[in-house]
Image (cartoon, rainbow, N blue to C red):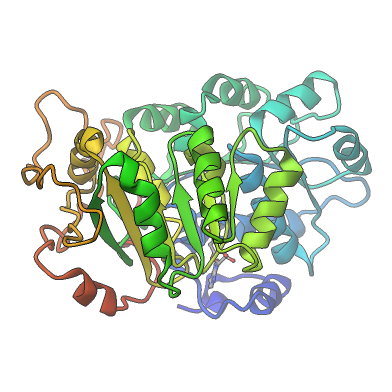
Length: 444
Ligand code: AMP
């Protein structure tokens, strides 16, 4: 499939070419035709699949085709859970709209509102916003959404995780009912399905990652290690210079700072990114990481959302997340845009239940890296039974709203591959964009 086949106008074709894209990604190939017909859409896709262009390109095309003469008012709104994600979406819109008359503004909290208000007063067609700042500025009368034609909810699952559901519903109440609505989410738990049922009208459904599966192009390994030995294991791994751009996850902000200090002592260039850091400190750390000046970025889950850095060679789960979905989000930061990526997880004795939950969620045994110098003496835990627990809500459930009885595709072919050695696994470079592809018309 070529971009030309998607009926995009010439200024957009020029923009994707200038961005260096040669072909649409699967989510783009599937979603763009639906969005162009002004249909509502439910998209199951992680960041890294090219989903921003999947909604941004057809939105820009729609707005450019019907741009009112004189005056500029908000016609499309993209809601994102974090400032990092919002600014990345904004940058993408800048890239894609550069040869069109469409203008966008990005607003988020944690920074002075004055420059944002000044830009709003100059006018824009598209607003990219985090929910809190948007409500603030709406409350102050700087923003009106009553002429909105398109609404996008990006990373809706994270939006809910972060407690934005009431804010999101308050915002949606101010948007005209006859809008087009697009909802993207990496996972489709029941509360997202309920939200989708409420706000989408006869949506098409596209998915590039089956619900609750892990990314296809990422090689995973678990290191059993006791907590006091985690710093030494991290240093041991980082002695490998092929680990060029490494994202390390800790459960807490305090933990992130501690890891940075420890790496500092070991002369490894590292920075932390978490909610206690100022916006400018976070941006600086991210820029240094992107530029390759900082080799290791240490992040907490929330801060990591929307980190849009290609070429992350390794993700290290220094602490395992207690929410198994976070594992999927975390490791999705490597192996992006067709590259192969590697995810290592440290697991101490207390974290073994988390590992079991993760393996059940992704329906896969994560291979153990045995024989490393800091291996836990507690012995290997029993192999996880991948069958869902009685009374548990996972893995993916059918969507009761899906009237045609079609369910999301289930993952196949990747299960129980723990017997292959890790090095064998790592040698294989499975290219291509992540995930299986599925698309169907929800209305049947
Ligand atoms: P996203 O999932 O929207 O965050 O996109 C992930 C990365 O893929 C971004 O760095 C995009 O610039 C890049 N990207 C998006 N579409 C394409 C494409 N068709 N070809 C190559 N790279 C792309």
